[in-house]
Length: 172
Image (cartoon, rainbow, N blue to C red; front, side, top):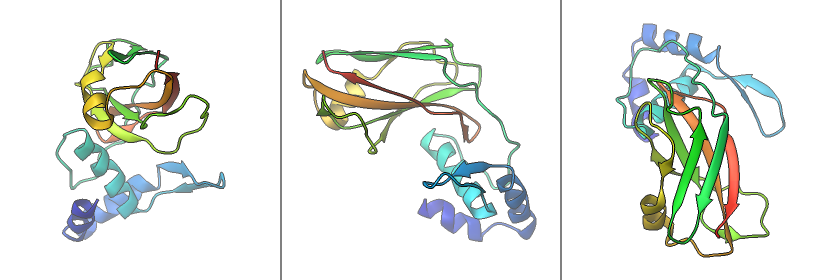
């Protein structure tokens, strides 16, 4: 975020105007349910933060909005020894990737989670399933039988993410 904030200062007025125009076409909803559009700085940071998370290079000129196809289904297989997500449509569209956000382990009785952390981003056009056992274990430890893990899955293309697909699973 700080890298993008500093880079914003180096843009030309024409580039900033392009980001403002893009931002006016991006709608978000706040915690009170009120819709708002992004200003140029917010649009710049949103797109470039997504790009950097995906391993792509940041851009100075505002891109054209793309809407990646959302996931249709997601089925989680979760044991102490295996953690994967089978999804459709598979494979993802040619330029699409999948952002996999996960929670630390919670009690099985927990039904809400607000603590998601980016675990992995698939390759473009990746086929199902996404196997995340090693990445999850390295970040949070071996899943413990009886604990719940929350996932938030988002498709990605060119700096833009699709609608989140939220699911949780108890470790079997």
